[in-house]
Amino acid sequence: MEKPLKLLLAQHGLNLKKAYGQNFLTDENLLADIVEKAGVTQNDTVLEIGCGAGALTRVLATSAKKVVGYEIDQRLKPLLKETVGEFSNVEIVFGDIMKQKIAEVENKLGGEYVMVANLPYYITTPIIMQFIENAKNIKAMVIMVQEEVAYRLSAKASTSDYGAITVAINLRGKAEVVLRVPRDKFTPPPNVDSAVVKIEIEKDKFSGVDFSVVRDIVRCGFQSRRKMLVNNLMNVYKLSRADAEKWLIDSGVETTVRAENLTAEDYIRLSEYLLKKSIKK
Ligand code: SAM
Image 1 (cartoon, rainbow, N blue to C red):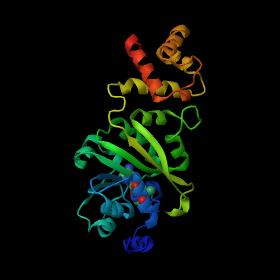
Image 2 (image 1 turned 90 degrees about the vertical axis):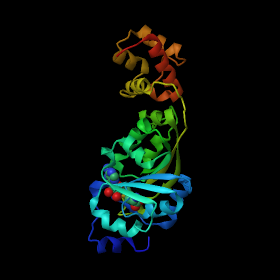
Image 3 (image 1 turned 180 degrees about the horizontal axis):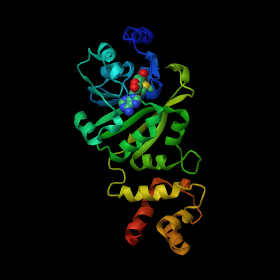
Image 4 (image 1 turned 30 degrees about the vertical axis):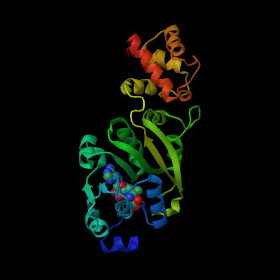
């Protein structure tokens, strides 16, 4: 950025809002690193969520074909005009990304795109779930999250970090931690360190699967993650132990498993059995 962030904010009479998770990045090397890890090229359209003062937006603008950014804080309009106004390939929409329909966001993007976002921590999970479940044209999500969340998103089965969100990601692609970012890289510094996670979406991974059924089973399993899955299935689907055990055995998993022991593929087999046997909640 041409001007230091503090000067820019002072000139526009702005103070940063904690409620919007406004912890901004200024380190040009780090910003370039994030865009490089995102693998953004001149052929790519980028969806940026939370443009802030536009530091990441500027780097994206020079690397991508087009950038569509969403920013909730209307006060940043004049500042963003100053920092990214010179780029004809940047369009900023002022509004809450959580209130937009994904289909409308995707219309604006006009085809395949990569999401790059230094997200406010309070919307990390809902944003990931919304896009994982509903986005049609997304190629990858490259998102800055709290470090502990990064480990959850990219966890392996049978670890304590593995959860419903990990399975949801694995149903459409895979997540990897690509960069660790210490808290002092932000202005103001948050209370925790962060990491950038890249979620690659694999086109047509598990095509033909009824994801709503899979999600129901995943939710059922993780609602009491300490319990064996067989007990959760018995409760939620009103089954006898024998029937719930048969469901597991015929799906190729052991009767003693907990939700965290199963991969996305295991959950898909469980969902296929449910559909075949017309099991209802
Ligand atoms: N991209 C900038 C950077 O890296 O320096 C800012 C990142 S800051 C962590 C998050 C940004 O997201 C803030 O500018 C905040 O105002 C914006 N934001 C927060 N909630 C939002 C929402 N629901 N929709 C769109 N933007 C949001």
